[in-house]
Amino acid sequence: MNGSLWEWQFVWEALPILLLAFVKVTLVVTLLGSAIAAVLGLLIAVARRSAPGPIAAVITFIVNFIRMTPIVVQLLFVYYAFTGVPPVTLGIIVFGIHYATYMAEVYRAGIDAVPVGQWEATTALSMSRRRTWMAVIVPQALRSTIPSLGNYVIAMFKDTPFLLAITVVEMVRAAQLFGAATFRYTEAFTLAGIIFLIASYPTSLLIGRLEKRLAYK
Image 1: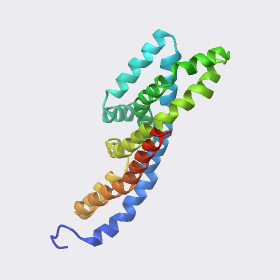
Image 2 (image 1 turned 180 degrees about the vertical axis):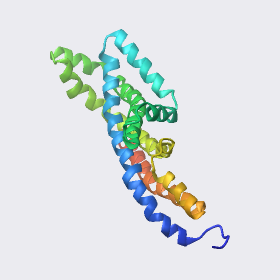
Image 3 (image 1 turned 90 degrees about the vertical axis):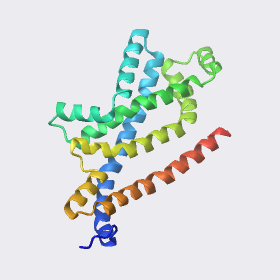
Protein backbone atom coordinates (compact mmCIF):
# COMPACT_ATOMS: atom_id res chain seq x y z
CA MET A 1 0.00 0.00 0.00
CA ASN A 2 1.36 3.39 -0.95
CA GLY A 3 0.97 6.59 1.02
CA SER A 4 -1.28 8.43 -1.44
CA LEU A 5 -4.19 10.39 -0.03
CA TRP A 6 -6.82 8.82 -2.29
CA GLU A 7 -7.11 5.29 -3.66
CA TRP A 8 -10.13 4.37 -5.80
CA GLN A 9 -9.68 0.72 -4.91
CA PHE A 10 -10.81 1.45 -1.36
CA VAL A 11 -13.75 3.51 -2.59
CA TRP A 12 -15.14 0.50 -4.44
CA GLU A 13 -14.45 -1.73 -1.45
CA ALA A 14 -16.19 0.61 0.97
CA LEU A 15 -19.18 1.45 -1.24
CA PRO A 16 -21.22 -1.76 -0.79
CA ILE A 17 -20.51 -1.78 2.95
CA LEU A 18 -21.70 1.80 3.41
CA LEU A 19 -24.73 1.34 1.16
CA LEU A 20 -25.78 -1.71 3.14
CA ALA A 21 -25.50 0.21 6.41
CA PHE A 22 -27.38 3.11 4.82
CA VAL A 23 -30.30 0.95 3.70
CA LYS A 24 -30.51 -1.35 6.73
CA VAL A 25 -29.99 1.24 9.47
CA THR A 26 -29.74 4.90 8.44
CA LEU A 27 -32.74 4.85 6.12
CA VAL A 28 -34.86 2.59 8.35
CA VAL A 29 -34.26 4.70 11.45
CA THR A 30 -35.08 7.88 9.51
CA LEU A 31 -38.30 6.54 8.01
CA LEU A 32 -39.65 4.87 11.15
CA GLY A 33 -38.46 7.68 13.42
CA SER A 34 -40.13 10.24 11.13
CA ALA A 35 -43.40 8.30 11.17
CA ILE A 36 -43.38 8.22 14.98
CA ALA A 37 -42.46 11.90 15.18
CA ALA A 38 -45.16 12.98 12.72
CA VAL A 39 -47.97 11.12 14.50
CA LEU A 40 -46.81 11.79 18.06
CA GLY A 41 -46.08 15.44 17.27
CA LEU A 42 -49.63 15.93 16.02
CA LEU A 43 -51.08 14.25 19.11
CA ILE A 44 -48.96 16.48 21.34
CA ALA A 45 -50.05 19.63 19.51
CA VAL A 46 -53.73 18.69 19.73
CA ALA A 47 -53.42 17.71 23.39
CA ARG A 48 -51.74 20.99 24.32
CA ARG A 49 -54.52 22.89 22.57
CA SER A 50 -57.52 20.94 23.87
CA ALA A 51 -56.46 19.43 27.21
CA PRO A 52 -57.30 21.10 30.55
CA GLY A 53 -54.78 23.69 31.75
CA PRO A 54 -52.85 21.54 34.28
CA ILE A 55 -52.49 18.63 31.85
CA ALA A 56 -51.41 20.95 29.03
CA ALA A 57 -48.83 22.50 31.36
CA VAL A 58 -47.37 19.07 32.17
CA ILE A 59 -47.22 18.16 28.48
CA THR A 60 -45.51 21.47 27.72
CA PHE A 61 -42.90 20.87 30.44
CA ILE A 62 -42.12 17.38 29.14
CA VAL A 63 -41.90 18.62 25.55
CA ASN A 64 -39.54 21.45 26.51
CA PHE A 65 -37.38 19.10 28.59
CA ILE A 66 -36.97 16.65 25.71
CA ARG A 67 -36.38 19.36 23.14
CA MET A 68 -33.73 21.10 25.25
CA THR A 69 -31.83 17.91 26.12
CA PRO A 70 -29.13 16.73 23.65
CA ILE A 71 -30.24 13.71 21.69
CA VAL A 72 -26.95 11.95 22.48
CA VAL A 73 -27.74 12.16 26.19
CA GLN A 74 -31.19 10.71 25.53
CA LEU A 75 -29.72 7.87 23.48
CA LEU A 76 -27.19 7.00 26.16
CA PHE A 77 -29.82 7.17 28.90
CA VAL A 78 -32.19 4.69 27.24
CA TYR A 79 -29.29 2.49 26.14
CA TYR A 80 -28.19 1.92 29.72
CA ALA A 81 -31.70 2.00 31.18
CA PHE A 82 -33.18 -0.58 28.80
CA THR A 83 -30.37 -3.03 28.23
CA GLY A 84 -32.68 -5.77 26.96
CA VAL A 85 -33.97 -3.74 24.00
CA PRO A 86 -32.06 -3.82 20.67
CA PRO A 87 -30.10 -0.58 20.20
CA VAL A 88 -31.65 0.07 16.78
CA THR A 89 -35.13 -0.10 18.29
CA LEU A 90 -34.08 2.30 21.03
CA GLY A 91 -32.64 4.64 18.42
CA ILE A 92 -35.87 4.69 16.42
CA ILE A 93 -37.92 5.43 19.54
CA VAL A 94 -35.59 8.15 20.80
CA PHE A 95 -35.38 9.85 17.41
CA GLY A 96 -39.14 9.63 17.03
CA ILE A 97 -39.88 11.14 20.43
CA HIS A 98 -37.14 13.76 20.21
CA TYR A 99 -38.26 15.08 16.84
CA ALA A 100 -41.92 14.81 17.81
CA THR A 101 -41.32 17.70 20.19
CA TYR A 102 -40.09 19.85 17.30
CA MET A 103 -42.86 18.76 14.96
CA ALA A 104 -45.41 19.49 17.67
CA GLU A 105 -44.37 23.14 17.53
CA VAL A 106 -44.78 23.12 13.76
CA TYR A 107 -48.25 21.63 14.09
CA ARG A 108 -49.11 24.16 16.80
CA ALA A 109 -48.19 27.03 14.49
CA GLY A 110 -50.30 25.48 11.73
CA ILE A 111 -53.27 25.06 14.07
CA ASP A 112 -52.96 28.64 15.30
CA ALA A 113 -52.96 29.80 11.68
CA VAL A 114 -56.42 28.33 11.04
CA PRO A 115 -58.83 31.29 10.86
CA VAL A 116 -61.06 31.84 13.88
CA GLY A 117 -64.04 31.74 11.56
CA GLN A 118 -63.38 28.05 10.90
CA TRP A 119 -63.69 27.27 14.61
CA GLU A 120 -66.84 29.35 14.85
CA ALA A 121 -68.34 27.59 11.84
CA THR A 122 -67.87 24.17 13.39
CA THR A 123 -69.57 25.40 16.56
CA ALA A 124 -72.48 26.80 14.57
CA LEU A 125 -72.84 23.45 12.79
CA SER A 126 -72.79 21.61 16.14
CA MET A 127 -69.85 19.47 15.00
CA SER A 128 -68.28 17.20 17.60
CA ARG A 129 -64.82 18.02 18.88
CA ARG A 130 -63.38 14.97 17.16
CA ARG A 131 -64.96 15.82 13.81
CA THR A 132 -63.89 19.44 14.15
CA TRP A 133 -60.27 18.42 14.51
CA MET A 134 -60.25 15.64 11.92
CA ALA A 135 -62.38 17.23 9.19
CA VAL A 136 -61.62 20.93 9.52
CA ILE A 137 -58.64 21.95 11.66
CA VAL A 138 -56.00 19.27 11.01
CA PRO A 139 -56.34 19.23 7.18
CA GLN A 140 -55.91 23.02 7.04
CA ALA A 141 -53.02 22.97 9.51
CA LEU A 142 -51.18 20.24 7.58
CA ARG A 143 -51.22 22.24 4.37
CA SER A 144 -48.96 24.91 5.82
CA THR A 145 -46.76 22.61 7.90
CA ILE A 146 -45.66 19.96 5.37
CA PRO A 147 -42.51 21.85 4.21
CA SER A 148 -41.32 22.44 7.79
CA LEU A 149 -42.00 18.82 8.72
CA GLY A 150 -39.93 17.75 5.72
CA ASN A 151 -37.02 19.86 6.92
CA TYR A 152 -37.11 18.07 10.28
CA VAL A 153 -37.05 14.72 8.51
CA ILE A 154 -33.85 15.81 6.75
CA ALA A 155 -32.44 17.00 10.09
CA MET A 156 -33.21 13.60 11.62
CA PHE A 157 -31.51 11.88 8.69
CA LYS A 158 -28.35 13.92 9.25
CA ASP A 159 -28.43 13.19 13.00
CA THR A 160 -28.40 9.41 12.56
CA PRO A 161 -24.59 9.25 13.07
CA PHE A 162 -25.30 9.91 16.76
CA LEU A 163 -26.47 6.29 16.88
CA LEU A 164 -22.83 5.21 17.06
CA ALA A 165 -22.98 6.33 20.71
CA ILE A 166 -25.15 3.28 21.44
CA THR A 167 -23.11 0.87 19.26
CA VAL A 168 -25.45 0.94 16.26
CA VAL A 169 -23.50 0.38 13.05
CA GLU A 170 -25.09 3.03 10.86
CA MET A 171 -23.33 4.42 7.81
CA VAL A 172 -20.78 6.65 9.55
CA ARG A 173 -19.92 3.93 12.05
CA ALA A 174 -19.51 1.51 9.13
CA ALA A 175 -17.10 4.00 7.54
CA GLN A 176 -15.18 4.24 10.79
CA LEU A 177 -14.91 0.46 11.06
CA PHE A 178 -13.79 0.21 7.44
CA GLY A 179 -11.12 2.81 8.07
CA ALA A 180 -9.93 0.98 11.17
CA ALA A 181 -9.65 -2.28 9.25
CA THR A 182 -7.89 -0.86 6.18
CA PHE A 183 -6.23 2.27 7.58
CA ARG A 184 -8.04 4.21 4.81
CA TYR A 185 -10.36 6.69 6.50
CA THR A 186 -10.37 9.38 3.81
CA GLU A 187 -12.17 7.32 1.19
CA ALA A 188 -14.70 5.87 3.64
CA PHE A 189 -15.73 9.14 5.30
CA THR A 190 -15.76 11.05 2.02
CA LEU A 191 -18.01 8.40 0.53
CA ALA A 192 -20.33 8.56 3.55
CA GLY A 193 -20.60 12.31 3.14
CA ILE A 194 -21.40 11.97 -0.56
CA ILE A 195 -24.14 9.44 0.17
CA PHE A 196 -25.66 11.80 2.75
CA LEU A 197 -25.55 14.60 0.17
CA ILE A 198 -27.06 12.52 -2.62
CA ALA A 199 -29.88 11.37 -0.34
CA SER A 200 -30.72 14.68 1.33
CA TYR A 201 -30.05 17.42 -1.23
CA PRO A 202 -32.73 16.42 -3.78
CA THR A 203 -35.21 16.06 -0.93
CA SER A 204 -34.31 19.53 0.29
CA LEU A 205 -34.91 20.95 -3.20
CA LEU A 206 -38.25 19.15 -3.40
CA ILE A 207 -39.34 20.58 -0.06
CA GLY A 208 -38.33 24.06 -1.18
CA ARG A 209 -40.42 23.74 -4.34
CA LEU A 210 -43.35 22.37 -2.35
CA GLU A 211 -43.13 25.29 0.05
CA LYS A 212 -43.25 27.81 -2.80
CA ARG A 213 -46.10 25.98 -4.46
CA LEU A 214 -48.21 25.93 -1.30
CA ALA A 215 -47.48 29.63 -0.72
CA TYR A 216 -49.30 30.54 -3.92
CA LYS A 217 -52.41 28.50 -3.18
